[in-house]
Image (cartoon, rainbow, N blue to C red; front, side):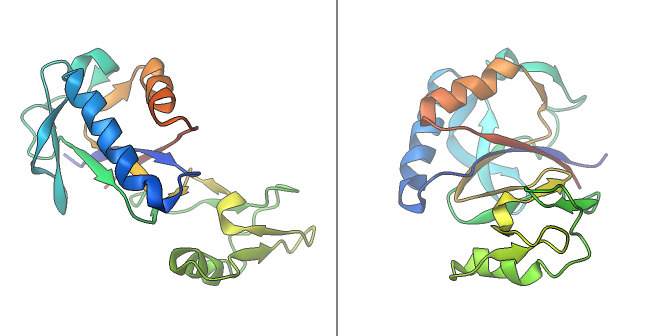
Length: 181
């Protein structure tokens, strides 16, 4: 069985606020008994929070064998990261102005500059000549750019109100990115 993950990303978080947001989210999810507050070895390559007794209250459908899986936790990210589907590759990078696919253009430098927080993470569209931050382009499948995110490993399909509830807690819009290894 391959691992699935759902990344929930805040693209507007100030890096200085990431740790406080993480604490707020963990407290909320632990209080609702959706996750356990203690860290454990339940995610890939890091530590995370195991599901608690009320995890099912936020799911429409859980993956088969979820509770028996060693990888079934929630990973909290508080550093700059591109959240993407690493299993299926990239199909398109569309200009936010004209929609033209720019996958063949040189957007790699802009991505590196975004990671390094350098001045120019701009990409010039070869079709309409507009310049935009790499974070404004529409990636296919969906990508998220941020300094704060949650990765739910192998949980399944969430109820839509769960994302809305999390947005209320942190006070900003969230982007959802689906992935499979």
